[in-house]
Length: 250
Image (spheres, rainbow, N blue to C red):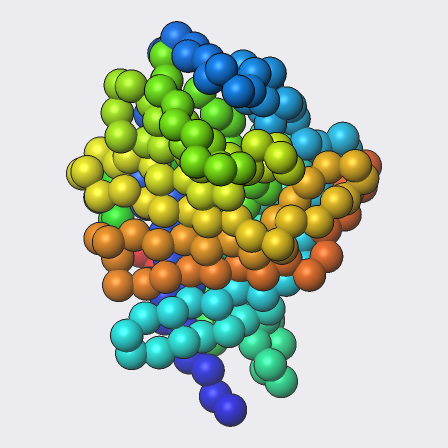
């Protein structure tokens, strides 16, 4: 089976998950009579990382009306610093390698022997939205922080809806498991990004999802990430070597 992924498709794996602007919240709390909402939010907002690096092995599925593409994924993430991803196809092996720092995106496409290094600002212009390293890391590691002040709440069974007052971003939390199940992030072009987490697992006494689903009404693509293994480590050595035979993308 031959798989050819052009540059736009590969970049969508990362850029699509940042296709919204996570607005900074300045808010005041509102308590429900049945639960301590402030305590719940603080428990969820506790940093999940206990080591310098998180390694995630799994599968990326890109869905559209024309095709479904399933690819292997190996993430190496250094907290608040670096995201590295190797994307592989069955039989073929690695088809692409991506690295994101605080201000740049590094990209190799092995299917057509090309590479590029661009600023995150450049990527923002291409997809017509604000791009943030912090937002990418929060979504992949399911560490999206809930607003701690100035929000409204609505309880429906074991699910709590938390909605920010300044904008339309909202969060659905399972109050029993103390996990975020769904996030709807407002964007600069009023096209919300829906993020859904499911099948949670306990890793080093921390809760992580088994699956991540991302949808946007402004994109023809839906993205799913299935996590098969998550581990923490003190040291990783991700490489990003560009062959001299590859051509740079302008």
